Length: 301
Image 1 (cartoon, rainbow, N blue to C red):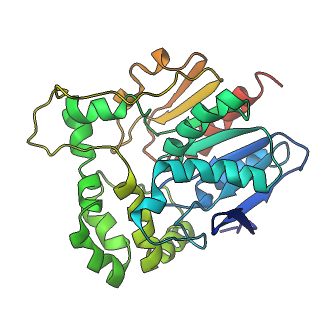
Image 2: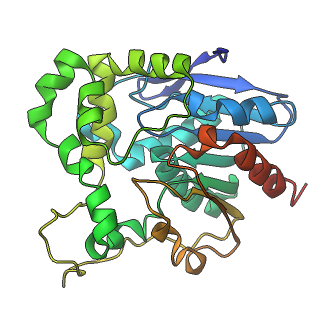
């Protein structure tokens, strides 16, 4: 396992992030956001592929590995995570950038893109297996498969699991509640590094706090499969910046139905499905992912 060098970056508000910052300083900037329960290494293949041509920035996000882990669910609300990205860009002297996110990092990237398009700071967005904030909440009510796959949210939010997190870290809870089989495509050294990260009780609670701070409501399995009378869609703006969505089509946690209707919400959308690939598409299928990113970034160069 080849380590990626990191620097410690103070972004304000008492938060410091450990950050990979590779590539020419005068090249276009790409900010990579990992999801749970991973780290900056989600993007190891993409950074190796792109760092000769782009400035590649990949933080361990708030709550992960050595980055700051403030105590309290309120510190992990979506607005805090979105703000971290812009504060990180400011701290590194980056005015405009492309945001790239997977899983929870993709959820943050959607928000960064929607805010950043208005100011001109975010030029493009690349999202990998992360549902759109206007689509996912509806599917949780109307789709039996998506609701069943998302029941782990409810387990992660249950404070009865906190004693186990403090005693054993995150791994036992992940093994018990995550849907579908684990990927067999991760190298043993990568898996060992992740398991070491999960064993830290402070990191385990911080990672779970992302789920607890989210406004997304996951109904129980026995709730009606219809939108409630008081359901109100999240008022998110239409994306107008170029947006690439890459989707591993065998994702057990987020099915491809999450792509339905996305073209109505994004003016300039490119969708690249990756068949035979599960949720962790950046490292399960680095070849197709890198090719899709290359083609997308080459459009306006």
